[in-house]
Structures are given as C-alpha cells and as structure tokens.
Amino acid sequence: QSVLTQPPSVSAAPGQKVTISCSGSSSNIGNNDVSWYQHLPGTAPKLLIYDNKKRPSGIPDRFSGSKSGTSATLGITGLQTGDEADYYCGTRDTILRTGVFGPGTKVTVL
Amino acid sequence: EVQLVQSGAEVKKPGESLKISCEGYGPFFTSNWIAWVRQMPGKGLEWMGIIYAGDSDTRYSPSFQGRVTISVDQSIRTAYLQWSSLKASDTAIYYCARQETSITGTTPYFDHWGQGTLVTVSS
Image (cartoon, rainbow over all chains, first blue to last red):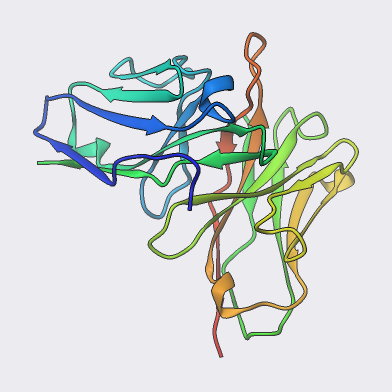
C-alpha cells in the first residue's frame, strides 16, 4: 500500500493529451521534489522528470511535470503508441525515511 | 556512459539462499548511492533499500529490513542484494538504480537503472 495515490489508468487517442496525478501528504510530496518514471514491460524504468518539472537530456518536451502542495502531475502531449506504458511518481517520505513510489498508472493509447 | 548491468535470472526453491548483483560501468560508483527496487508480478515498483558505494552506509525500507541484505564491493564496482532463506513471495523482478540529486534540488531520484533480474522461487 503506497503512501502516494495515482489513478490506475488513463487513456486517450493518438495526438491527444493525458495527465496523471500523484497525490501524497506533507511528509512526502508536500516537502520534497517529485520524479516520474516510464516503465515498459520487460525493460528498465526510465527517468522522465526530476525536481518536479525538469527533463533529463533526451526526454522530449511532450513530457512535462508540475507540483502544487501535496500533489504532482505528469502531462504527456501528442500521445504516441510508443507512450503506452506504466508511469510512476516517486519522492522521499520523511516519516518513513525511505524513497517511495506511487502505485503506477497505465497509459493506453486508443 | 553510465550503465548498470545486473546478473541473470534465477530459479530457486523456498529456503534457499541467493545473491544477485549489479555492476556499474562508467565514470561513477563510489560517489553514488545504489538502490534496489522490487516489482512483484502484476504490481508496481517498491523501494527496498539503498547503499552508498563509497562507505557501505545502508538504509532499508521497514518492509524489507531483516529480510534482505544489501552490500557492495567497491573494488569491482558491484552492489548486491541477498536473501538467506527465500520464500515464494520473493518471486519478483529486482532492479538496481543509481540515485542522483541535482545541484539545485534536494530530493534524490533514479537516473540510471539496471535491466532487472527475475527471481523465481518455487518448489
């Protein structure tokens, strides 16, 4: 049972936009930065966003991140079939004193 | 180029011991924390624990404390995850990941991941 909450799934047609929410509390998102990861089955997870909204080199600007209070959001615009994957938010929890991941959100391109 | 290369898939029986590895390639290692992350079948990512390769300082998630041991051998740039007595519920894919923190940030993230090691525990 994660301390972070994400919707189990989101979907949209190719070219459209999806947003994925990640909700937490003051012990995690509220006082820490958030990162986002893309995970395709059978492959290593990939870092998409760190420090709430920064993209590593090589990550297209179709992916964006934001944070407000105890919630964070990942946005994907211009949805492509290759974007079908599970997406996880991550941060640190200062009460648990560990890193934490959200339960994951499956993105489906209709 | 930074790479983490994990050992191959394992099939074990309940009660057996196991040690899986994660070797680091590239201009890093002793100045980084290396984490282990579990993914059980059909489930999400779980943070298990982390080790600082420079001095072996180790932290565990309460969920995994006492169940696994994380270690590192600096001389061969390799981190390990081991079990002394496996259970069927340990069946999962285990990933190692390099933890980083940006110059302007305060919260670490995982910027490089190993390819994963599938551990199957079955009688």
